[in-house]
Length: 444
Ligand code: AMP
Ligand code: MG
View 1 (tube, rainbow, N blue to C red):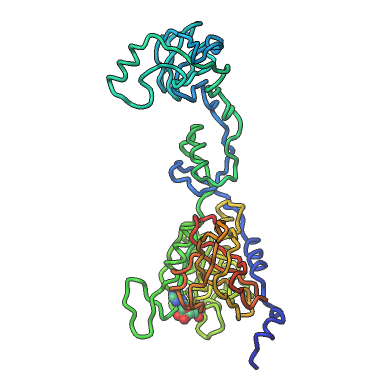
View 2 (view 1 turned 90 degrees about the vertical axis):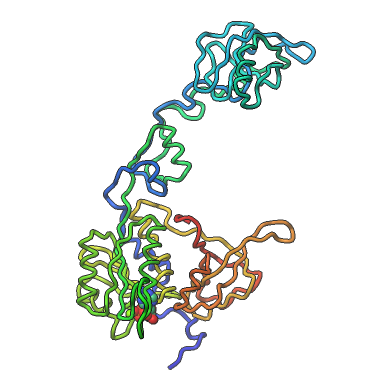
């Protein structure tokens, strides 16, 4: 009997899991890894911190000037104006990294440059623009330095408030307070904070190790020329790249032929190499040569799921010798999409992340996007930005073209997966589609 689209839309087959349920079930089997490592800050990007980091100093560590100008006492220039300039005696210059050797007395000024510590007893900085001081506004070599050193007095043309143009000690951060919390993802901003507060290395979750196994009698490596009936293995290199993209270390196992003994020993070697997750591609559907299924059935605690999903309906998940295993379908698009959906959040969770879902955008379809699969469909799309006639920016989306799961080239054209609900047969031009961006940095 053939099923029509209407039949398929009537409801899922009773044993079919929704994508979201399948993700939940996979995630329930993972915990953040119990072991941690100390890494230099320049290798910490994207890692998850396991310690609270306190500020080891006040920031700024001293009162400092926010401007180039003169450190003074505000009271001295209270009456200053264009018509009534106040003359102050210049007693020296403080550049960033230098410290004044004497306190400031009434009627005096220090030339001071941005970032330099305030001299004792000065309470504010008058910007050089409000004075007749010379030699500011950029590097002018030895002549400039001589001119600055020769300056003995200045006239001030405007008053300042007490504290004006001063950055006070501890105003950014007080010593002892937590500046980055355990569980934080280390991004460039965290790197700046950690370096500022004296952490050249940090404790983070270790990277998960993921063993990757391609199975199939027909497969040869990228370096080989396929003989009759053979194709190159595109999946293992791509799955390894996905692992790296999401912060895991891939362990590449050699291609296994469709022979239970070979698949078994390949998986065993993944376990021996201390994989935290085993990923296979191919061999999990119904064919006689689907030996991965056979091996997992005979020696793992593995379930075979039919997921209400296109591409990638068959999926195996469970444990083998205590190690979680995900059996992905062999078609290239299916294996990459199911990695994104099911392996990615598992890898992130092991690495200590708590935000596991990919960010979804709404994009305006600019062509009809048809879903005749009767399943939730993650179609390959191209997301762009455009300006609307009213001058707003919006995301648009179109298909990459052919959507069959063997069209590996569609993955290279796509920058997004378009998530089309199973009951929606078409997204019309102008309607919004949910999209997951593929080429944003790992966590997006
Ligand atoms: P399977 O899931 O083993 O039945 O494979 C489904 C389809 O995907 C078949 O056409 C295979 O030749 C193809 N395939 C399986 N593994 C790979 C791979 N690693 N790279 C490219 N194509 C593959
Ligand atoms: Mg196969």
